[in-house]
Length: 420
Image 1 (cartoon, rainbow, N blue to C red):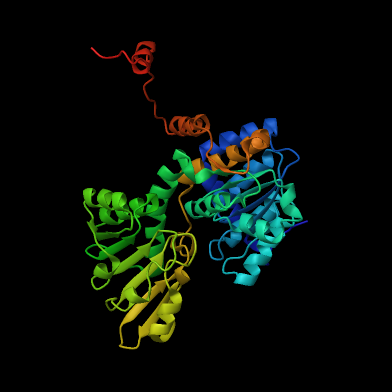
Image 2 (cartoon, rainbow, N blue to C red):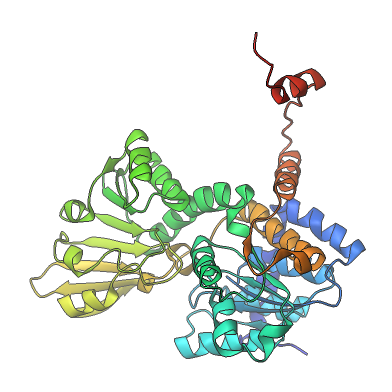
């Protein structure tokens, strides 16, 4: 029986081709899937997965199912679902999917509830919406079945760390985002490329010579700033962290307060995970024609209500582009309703980088099955040996070999008497 909220199941053939195309660029996950098919490490376990429903995610779902898991997938963002992929997962792989691109808030939460009602043993989350709702509304029912979970993104990890601090977290979580093979590549190179991809698809704007403001210089901001600079933009970074601000300066970027940048900014993209990064006081200083967008997890980084209050009219001028005309005649262009630009207006991160991220998800779920009883109700990092295993497989798939320390070198590095 096909369990999918996408009405047009005829999209499935296109989605299957996209899933296969992504698989070609995900050799690490493919090798894990081959092992999972033989060993069935997730046999008998129910997984509720709240992730962006993309072709890359589809290959993770296939891997988990090959490992013996009983899976349900829902979307972690209302605009990130690829409908053809969702249809293919249900039709071709018999994996229930609760997701539709462009779903409203009520539908989004209905889909989250459907995933929770699967009564999972393990959760996989991207932003901690599933885990948060599970703790808030289902503490006396489905929560008690969960032995552990994984979290994909920075925003979710921050929320979960807050739950741990308040002693509200009721099961162990593996923070996939904290693995080196995740944030050093997915956050930096994935976000850098896919955000610009979304910008170009939505606007077709040329960024050469433009004043391009990146709000936040974490790994995502570093990747975005690097890519924009490489394409000829005049990159300005805004930060609240002194160390990160110094990093940005020494990487050759201009660093200033957002109030200083607003009158000269042509494009602003937020990547902080915080609230009202672009606020009313900033918007009042915007130059005519400003393009503003977000690549953080939630659409809270841009104060959309403030834009609405400052505007005298609004119209949609392109897909994912809303034009606000302010009362003094200036125009501001908001992309993708302030949601994840790289997934709303484009296809998300390239498969080759998601390969390592989702390898962490798969191995994290396997680790929970084996070790949940000894982990405690805390946020954990995947053991370094698994992180390095993923890196080793990735390098091998790329045809790259590296040196190995000789016994003499190992002894030298491990001795405190290694001086002359």
